Length: 363
Image (cartoon, rainbow, N blue to C red):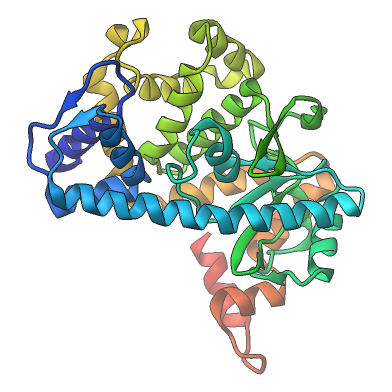
């Protein structure tokens, strides 16, 4: 891990933290740091913090860059909301309930401003067992398939079915919060019983309640960390949600109680997020140097491909049912021909046996 990354991490966290008094920027902000901030999804947030006088001392270059991102996000949000509403109408019309997840949900409610939370796609949740049915409804309505699943078994076990394009925007239909083999999967929970409903620009939107949203965000970050990745923007999501609770300590305890066996990993993420809440009591109890070091390591350039493959195979081995395990493991090494042609850009008349052999050796 480079000292340069560590310095950028500490500077960015101090810049975006939720605090009562104004934070004065002392160090010069260069183009590399601007890009680092944007890569972590925080450019628009920095601009908004400056507008609220929560940050002072930003130079014209960084402020102009982050202002442009804020307005780009605001414009893009209108497109995302329109597509979400279109999807919702198609699915509810077919008798399938819909819930907003991740970016569209956070931007619409938690952040309180359309331009603050960047989005790369739209994530929705439908009741478990309704994923393929929802996909079929949207494909008939004109959605375009973007990816090919490894196999039908993978698509049934994954958290979401194959991604589609609707009006130029990628949509992922989640049939559960986490895959069947994930240690964060919560079988038997009907998330549609744990929701709140908001209205955004005339569009009614169902979301997870704060407890389950926190669980999803924290567990998602743990999953990302286990696979070698993290964005400071994820920590801001969690910090904002915790900050909005009256008893933040009790709230975090409730979240941990959902999956006690993952408490240590989840608490580690919460501690990272608490770096963004310097006015909270727990802030002074944190091991700041260790947390900054951990975040810096995860944001540094590292090759985590082998780790990802190991975690993926471990998750497949946890899927219920021996026959399901065997089929998933088989198709992990020998995916469908359609997937191989899609994944490796193979022409229809080309042989696949060399690619299958290469894939086996890679695993």
